[in-house]
Length: 399
Image 1 (cartoon, rainbow, N blue to C red):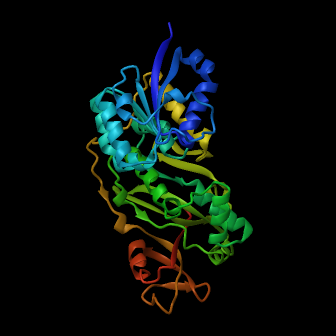
Image 2: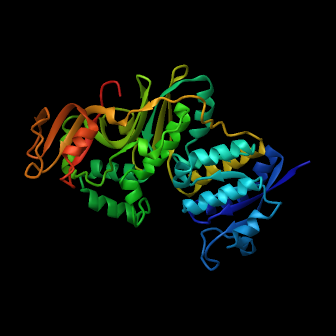
Image 3: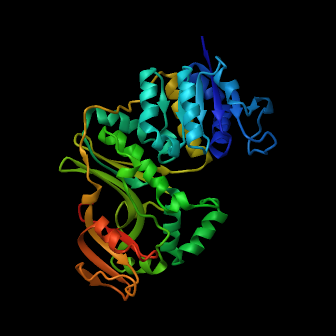
């Protein structure tokens, strides 16, 4: 006898519409494999008159969350809004009503990761959020399995499609940042306000989720160093290409001497390396475990259907009663040592404003240098007065 599982979708933008489309178009297939019918009961929206890319029954639309919260026929809340605090409040209220949660909201999840996970665990509920990291790539679910029998020592990746598209086009077409950003916006790869993407905040939030799961202890947003891509120029691309390197924005977290270090920054990887081959809006995540070794995950990091597919898979996991394997507070309390992050760096700065005479440098051009074995934060402080400066980490041989 088949079950009927009621869901409500909070937010009906790109991802919400994608979830609706998949559930409707794959209705028979999902029911065949799960012996359950997913019944979309309500869709929370702000504007009843908005036109959508999918055909919907407008009787499903509501702007009253209380209507959803108090409907006992709704078992699962699919939270795909763009809010942060309001989204968290709705998820908390829904869990207190005994409803399972699926979310793609990386900003809310990152900010309230511990609280939401703890509440789900305490209430024996599902809190699944595969789509919050790397779009359509299934990485959180495997990572939740891996931590049970592996000590994860590193997790890193290209986690933002907008930045990867921009850097790919700058590399391939030789254009400056501003021109490529404009093209990305015209093609829909970048928002009208791209700051959370190009400043690295989106990648930082995803790395916060990944590293907290991987290392089995809280790695907060404030524990991660951050450098975006908006100051990268065509000359930086060309200078590093001469050294056989390609620039990528990479989120990287690792355990070293029982200390956790995490940073989001442009990295000059070798041009024949794996990450250099990840082009345009694609994402990739690499995980290192002491038992499994190195695993690579690759695929579409954004888009209506890839992201909605990840959301729908989480819904199906709930139908099969698969609990989230996120476990925090396991007694691991390693030091967060972001101030100890060192490396070799490419820097470009205005020498009329800044003096780096105290650093051991190798000159490339009048404005660009290579600096070896330097503490990142010390270098960052030294360049603070030049708002147009850029620090790009050089990939090491064992990176």
